Each structure stands twice: as structure tokens, then as C-alpha cells.
Length: 345
Image (cartoon, rainbow, N blue to C red; front, side):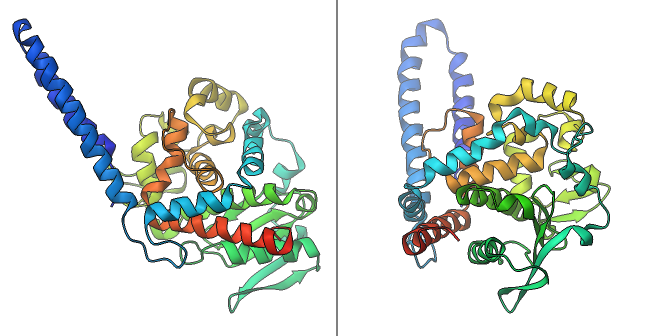
């Protein structure tokens, strides 16, 4: 079940059009009717929302969707401030330069290196539900990150087979190969809370850029998200398509097709639309937008009164009981780790 305030407000709009046609002498009656309708629709809206949060859920840590939401908030409350600070690092304008045409950083060169075997510092592969080092060197930080990724990534929802640490790379995922890649020379200097923020941005990619949710095709139905650059047509009920239908369908095709490749193009789009995105980096393309919104959903408290499109994007994920329950599990696991080990990994 998904809460749809748009449907309720759509009915309200039709009623208001009818009221607009009333004669002036009936205005007093119309005003009275309008007031009654608004109150009634508000009650209906609240009822629908209450029913959703009361919906039972099969979980060991919470019994209803609303309880899962609250369990997540309770367990994350101690760490939301630090997570929010880490998430806001992607609000730096330099993120418009990431893998743009003008990007001359060593990280960009590494991303274009076809022989990435030489840059691998450590590779872990999932064998019998455990990450096993199959290439490269042992390091405490690599082992720790491998452990937390194994614990927190729900492999029923995402394809994860390999965790690699490579020198001088941007964090990235290959959802077709089930590979997560992190920069070996940078993770050693990251705060653990920042590492967690990066991990859930990348998990957001794996969750929403999922080969089970799309078909590779030159064509796509008009009501489904089609990333022509990769010939990806997303299923109607996929997270990516539903997010597109809710927030992205009015944007120009070049941006929707991840076609803003220069800093100038990205800057122009950012200046025009920045208030509708959770971060600067989210304005780069649809993939980064949904991954950034997902990371904010996971690592910030629930907002029951969103005032902006950016805040509505974060709340988008609360309409999926399985994700609300997953958020509760993750935040509880992070708190338990801190309580037991004084660290996340």
C-alpha cells in the first residue's frame, strides 16, 4: 500500500472547479460547502496515513510500519547530527566537477583506466556469506569496512558479490557485476560516520540501478523511465520509475539521459533547479539524485512536514514498508556496534 496524497488533492481540485462556477449570490453557500469539504478531505487524508503507519510488518524489531519508522529514529538519534554533516559534504560546488569533461583529478583518470587490476589494493569476495580476501593486502580498515558492508547491505535487495579497494578512485558500483569499489588510499583517513554515508549512497545506487528492475531496450513505454544512454527501460513498479514519475518527468531530456557532461552545463542546471535537490551532487544526473535522496532517508530523522521538493524526495522512500523496516534494522545495528565496540567497524 502506498499513500497517495496526490489522488486526494486531485479530487479536491475537481470539486473546487465546480464551486468556481457558482453564481455570486450562492457564494456564501459555496464557501460553507468548501470549508466542509476541506475538513472532510483532511480527515480522510489523516485516516489513510494512519492506516498506512498501522500496517503490520513481518520483522523481528518492529510490528508495524510506523513502529519501524520510530525504531529507526530512536536508534539513530545519537548519530543523526554527525551523519547530516557528512551527507552535506556533497553540497560542495566541487561535486559538479566529478567526472565532468573538465575533471582532471587522478580519481577521474583512474575511473577511465581500463586495466583496473593493477590499481587493486585489496579484493574481498562473498563466499558462503562471508567476505574473503582473495587478492591484495590485509589491512584493519579494509577488514572493518568489509565486515560492516556484509552486516548492513541487504543482499536480498541488491546484487553484491565483490568489495574492492582501489587506489585513487571515486567510490562507485557496478550493479551488473555486483561490485562495490572504494578508494584504498582515502578510506584510511575518512571518519567512520562519513564512510557510512558513502556506503549508503552507493547502496542507493545498487538498490535503484538494479538489473532486476529494468530491461535493456532502444524503446520504452512513455510512462516509464528510459535512460537512453545505457538503453535502460525501468519497470513500471521499480523504485527508479516511481521516483521519476513523482519528481523528474518535467526535466529536460539531456539531464534525464545523464547528458550534462561539462561543468558549465551542470552549473546552469544547478542554478535553475537547486532548491529541488538534497545536495549539489544530486543535480548531476537522475542516478545521483535518487542515491543522494536515499542516503538522506537512511541517515536523517523522519520529517512529518516536508516543505520542499528536496524533503519530499527523502520522504518518498517511506511509502515502501520494506525500506522503512530496512532503515530501522540498519540504524539499530549501527547503534549496537557503537555500544559494543565504541565504533561502527
